[in-house]
Length: 289
Image 1 (cartoon, rainbow, N blue to C red):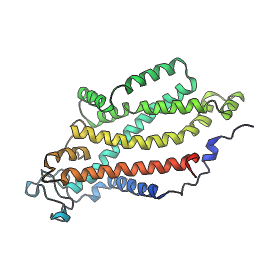
Image 2 (image 1 turned 90 degrees about the vertical axis):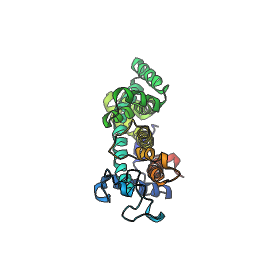
Image 3 (image 1 turned 60 degrees about the vertical axis):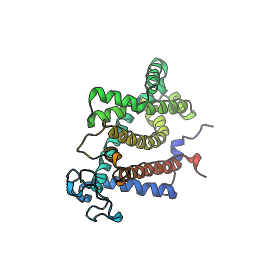
């Protein structure tokens, strides 16, 4: 008897069943996304305005002023406004980079996994060569040549991630193309494009979604690391990595300058990871009890 298409089975899942971790991840992710979207309306001060008269003010609860609720940095800029606007920079770079990596890696993975042959060997050898280089070192080398800019940063981060999507999608495609319902579709005269679109893509889509959520957190961390080193988004645009770098010389006297942006980065990454885990559990029936 022919196996039933798993895509049909997965379409019957109940999306409302989120556990506590999933709810927490959803709330944290919505908080970060909301801060990124409504940043101009949430900021208390101009995040680039320097005022040395209020430099290194502590947070309001630690003896500071309530008009600067999270304190100020060494140049007197409002940390709260900079952290809120930093969420936009991290999410925009992360989403653009992951989107570009998906657009390159997923088609290559589908083609190489479905047709195999010489193209498969060439693409996978290129992927192996790229994976041999440390990601941050490769990004630093490319940015040193191209120069730091927002566009170059997105290109570099996308180039470092397409390999992951290509290899994962290729592996999933190799498995799915041997299933009974795919072989039956081909035997009935379905073309390759129709077979891929109707039977292969729906069965690897869940894995791509889960991988994209995990990759997004890694890209956000990578962007913050490059900004910390001075190769990411350039001033005066506030970024979490840049703010952490600004306060590294003041950890003993003004801990909030680096700690609070680092805490915002931690919450963003944790929220996306928790939400990604919950989505994985919902999309994969094997993980549901």
